[in-house]
Amino acid sequence: MITHEIAAYGYLISAICFIMALRGLSSPVTSRGGNLYGIVGMVIAIGVTVASPGVVAPWLIIGGLVIGGAIGAVVAMRIQMTALPQLVAAFHSLVGLAAVFVAAAAFISPDAFGIGTPGKIKMHSLIEMGLGTVIGAITFTGSVVAFAKLQGLVTGSPLVFRGQHPLNALLGIILVVLLVWFALRGHPVTFVLLIVLSLLIGFLLILPIGGADMPVVVSMLNSYSGWAAAGIGFTLGNTALIVTGALVGSSGAILSYIMCKGMNRSIFNVILGGFGTDTSAAGPAHAKTDKPVKAGSAEDAAFLMKNAQSVIIVPGYGMAVAQAQHALREMADLLKKDGVQVRYAIHPVAGRMPGHMNVLLAEANVPYDEVFELDDINRDFASTDVAFVIGANDVTNPAAKTDPQSPIYGMPILDVEKAQTVLFVKRGMASGYAGVDNELFFRDNTMMLFADAKAMCENIVKALEGSAH
Image 1: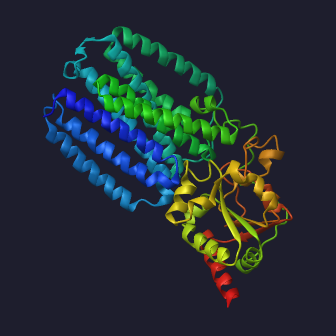
Image 2: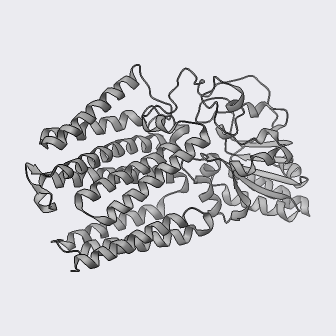
Image 3: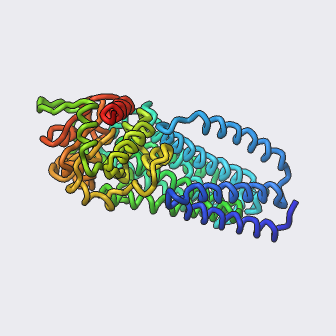
């Protein structure tokens, strides 16, 4: 066992490591170091907790660590990059559920936590416990819904019904009243009602959000899980949990705000579950059209890019599904050998979670200095010979600027239509998550490349290698 003073120093070192981890994760160049700081910080925090005074059965904690660590290791080794968003959502749900369980344990046995006796729990502890329970329960069910949508178990379309917003508002008011009453009286029935109502609100907040908006939802649920952990940290009197939860909660909220700004959406609509629910503006899913499109082959694409001076590649979720990032990098390397300037343009919400495309490109060892965010590269499309769009859809749809009735209207997009030629890799003419046709498919300067993204890149590589001989 260690003294309370040593434990406090250990938690301080752990908190510093977590802060350094966040700093490192702010850039792809320093992300590996950031991960290392996070690992060290977590090891210290766990070690201090197990050795802290008052821990009567450290072997139970160690047993849980072994079991949980083994499950985590197996999942990490088997998970595909395309399934990473739903894995993150699943992890968020576990954090929320853990917060509810800890709050329930503290409420049932407050003397074990030093916050009072059954029926006579300190008011500030009831407030902390109530907030942690509410946020944790909302995070749990909300993350379950997000997982189901991302996994395809539930439709990605917004699930809305008449009177949904008034119902959410009423439930929110009731929840606040229950929180106040719980803080004043601490009745067991009130605690149970808090859990049940919060679980219901979690469902109602995420169900009306469409699949196209899941990156922001995952980010916001990450923030919720952090605040839930912080609330329970106050109940437990655990400094590391408070600091870590606050870091996760605040960084997740900031990231959500940045993403909402990148989509021209309101952060309050995300929090209140009204994001993407304007059904009057929604277009029909997979709408069909008789407009003609220009289709091309891998050889056509290779010829156009080989003779270009500048190529900007725009990756999307289709690249992730096909696992095309390695073939794409090989294609880019061949183009660079021929003197072509190659860059990558990343939209803030490309893929299904923040940074999804950056992670995939980093996995393929794409140089960091060739990857640019929307604001840094958007003006360059007008002077670009070829824009190569691989699996992206809504983030390149000009309807966001031209059609006020479109559900994506007002969302900043990558201005690929301004390039001299647009090569668009897609399996077919299906719409994106927003359920609307992409005007770009029918532009005169667009050539559709209908194929699996990985197969198309591999065929372009063969064509480039063949033309070099």
